[in-house]
Length: 287
Image 1: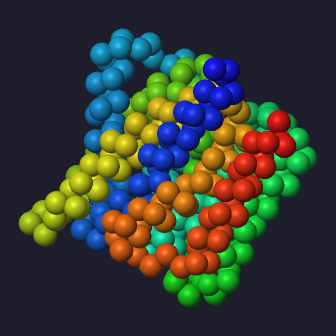
Image 2 (image 1 turned 180 degrees about the horizontal axis):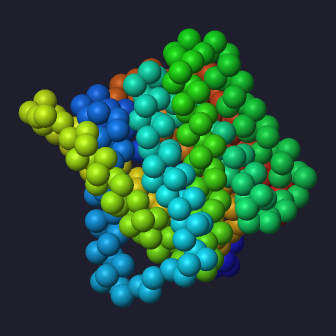
């Protein structure tokens, strides 16, 4: 199996894991303060990361790696989780998932800016088409859900795309799971402090689904998913593998419908099918 195919398989596993993030966050923000949730999920993942780095006796990153790791931390450890948690106070997970279709374009753009990648023109055609379909769907809804929620989701997409591209570039040197672990460790003091500052007065109202959602976003969304995702981006290319994120709405909508019983409209399904075709086209014609 060639390196490129390994990249696509690892990337797909990462996308499947990430697909549960927004539905789980939607459940969690109904029972936890969004800022506490952001701090707690990163703190839990950070403590696990400390254990992994210690167990495998991983050397500390060099000084030249600190700034890229800080960018990764700001993008995927702090920025995306916090902004999506705030957004999901205003919009449903099904509505927010559609915005994930813009993430591949953001990742590809930062892959060019930060990692020097140069995809073929046909790649950009299908990447922009997929993103336009998603943006068009959001606009067709008239932003009736909440302009604030949609703006927060757009901001989350931008910082996440930067964090993905920067992390993938660094993964070629440090390794995929090491990058996310060091980013979590760098964030740990701040996130522990944030958790303590916004610690709830009581957890009596938190249900089993709430705890399960916190566990999912802490272990899988913040750590396990990135092990596969950064490895896939490093193996297959940031811009190319990033297009797999266009599949995330499909998996996410299925979870939102089955677990949260949220409405999934025919328009949502149509957009999802269209972006899947765009992913296939970038893989088939964008080499």
